[in-house]
Length: 196
Image (cartoon, rainbow, N blue to C red; front, side):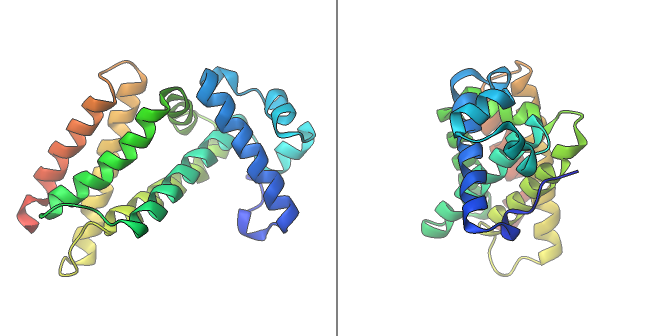
């Protein structure tokens, strides 16, 4: 069962939840997936172990929420400085490159959140769905206004599938994040070149 939605929390609960999330991010950045142990997260965040489980029912749900946080941050950055490029494919590639650049800066954390998102822990599924929704919103900023919403949605979903597939391959040792970026750029051109 998932924890409470962040929008239903009081200010003090939201601050505690954020401390827990930041502690998990630090531990994962330093040591990867295995370094995120709930007792260590509690100690780092300065909260009781039971407090963590009120917000995040499992380690994978906690790390999935971290990926959601990353995507929300990307969305905010794109709102300040929109996608760059003369064509739709170039703008879509720019958005995806920015997402990958964030992951390249913290590869152990990236591997940890991808591991959590592909786990068999169904309690992390809501994070996977939230990341997918955020990706669609983020990519929408790269499309011109005259593209039909259905076309935009299909292209974005296919790019999301390519992105997740490549990240899973990367996590399993196939290529580096530069390879992921190249695969995404190739897919963006195949799917978007006809849009101009």
